[in-house]
Length: 120
Image 1 (cartoon, helix red, strand yellow):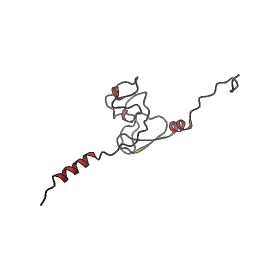
Image 2 (cartoon, one colour):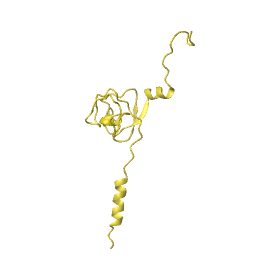
Image 3 (cartoon, helix red, strand yellow):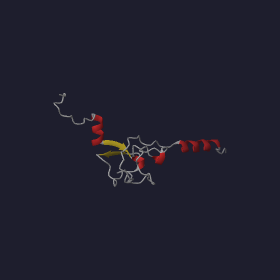
Image 4 (cartoon, helix red, strand yellow):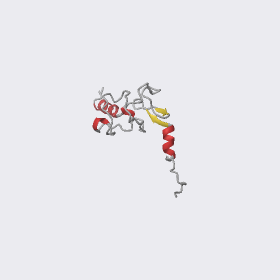
């Protein structure tokens, strides 16, 4: 006889995983603002800040621009527009940090301006 009285225990999830399934704070791929997600992301849901689609490849945990079809999920179908809503059954909202602002072009422009500064 087992320690559970002959019955199989229900699957127990760790607390942090259960919490993540119920409420997760993630960021939008387009604007980088935090988005509160409860449960699954529906295909029609949009970011409250920028109105971009949330159920898209770029918000998915499986999105990888260097992988085949830009997706690490091997059974997912190919999606042409990675930034628009799609019907992928494997979608899981990814926990990525907010995209860093790209200051490299601004820094390069400033260096060029300093280099070719007109002297009076």
